[in-house]
Image 1 (cartoon, rainbow, N blue to C red):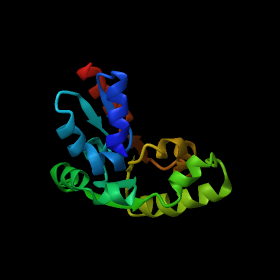
Image 2 (tube, rainbow, N blue to C red):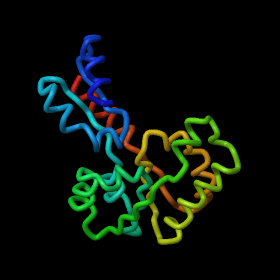
Image 3 (spheres, one colour):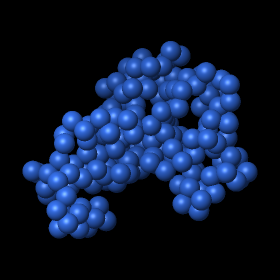
Image 4 (cartoon, rainbow, N blue to C red):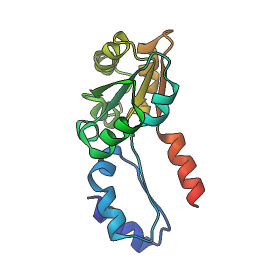
Length: 168
């Protein structure tokens, strides 16, 4: 699907592509860059590097899709920047579906978020990474679950913005 999507964008004359999905980045970024070596192609990945740099408790939670959490890029990033940091991996079970159904504010969605976020905080995480582009749509719900606990919630949006700006 990623190849077909980028092919269409190239035909439209784009000068850069952002693969706006962590899972698609994991699955296809290498093949896309190989197919279009002269086109800047920016991928998304969970913000592990900044999370590991900012944690005080040395415990970071990463919520992402199962494929992203098992991807080589994610695992190598954790190995490279997570030395001395416990990185808790959790799948955002039902998160994507809730966002796509526009049910971010439903009680069932908050329960799903609570089931994932609470154990991460209980294990001592002071930074939680939203490792899927759907998950920032749940930021209000996640903030309610976090409450007044001193836990930062971050995503890769700012890093991608910075990278795109530098390439353009």
